[in-house]
Image (cartoon, rainbow, N blue to C red; front, side, top):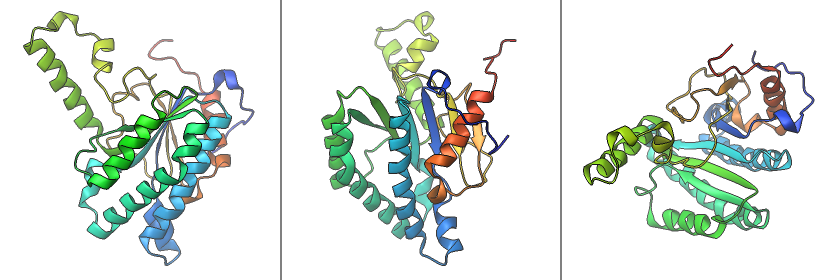
Length: 243
């Protein structure tokens, strides 16, 4: 089921954690004979719309795939513009997020980013770190396989130091070394743009996610489209491997 839904959103059955692969910005711009940058700019406005909608619905965790480890292969000018947009978005809206008790969290390795952007991110993380109403994870220079390898290396280091025995490694132990430590698993993964793949996004966290795909390009992904996804999600029977 892709876009049909029975859409009365009962808060009791809404997902606790939604992940979205924000895809289709470039195609949106190309379809309008615009530079690809304009698609990313329009797409950044949908981020604000969707964060506000999830906040309104009291969905406590939202993870947005902004820039993957593979996206560095894009043209240098496009990458530069993406980061300029990101910095502008954070600096424009971080005070509003903080006032509404939203915590910004970044998952991924931000060490390769330019110092000004990195500082802006770090300051925003510090400003909002104690907020409790909602967590917005921005996946930035992120890859699901890299995250699993990173967690494995950290656990191996703890074993090497004698701080952890191999037999003590549990599912809970492993999860505590992920970027999303202490967050619930992803209930719903949404991908717009017509692509039917997960593209190395939160591979561990969405082991039992419900998937929802749409042909809508991200710059056209309105809160009403999200409501369709949520209505569909609530109509499904999640068995987690049981009967």
